[in-house]
Image 1: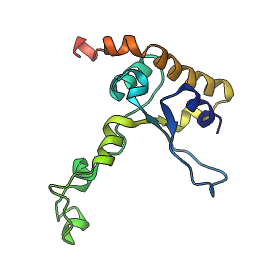
Image 2 (image 1 turned 180 degrees about the horizontal axis):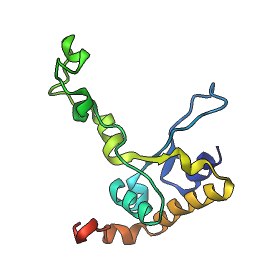
Image 3 (image 1 turned 45 degrees about the vertical axis):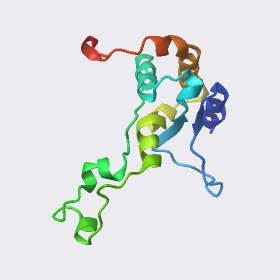
Length: 148
């Protein structure tokens, strides 16, 4: 995929690895792994806000670690795993937490329905983020209503 080839050239970003046996991938969400250190320490959520300000729809928390997901509440009435005695109380999932809250940038599939020019525009948003990382680190984006 053209996007996967070009996004690594920006630096500090990489698509998730794909199984080489998949020869015709279908993508619902394209996930990019974000390395904050390569972006002068800019937290992922600030990077998301900057990308969104550029008009790039993207998301952070699409999936969250099991204990944080209300879908998997330890309620035996609504959760078959809980009825079977499964419990994850007190457990931590550091890799899932890091992916969900610090590293994952989710891009919706409709961004990739266009042509190569559209892919170049998406990559350019990430490149602009990288070029302006120092300024973004010094002045994080403001939340709506002027809150940081």
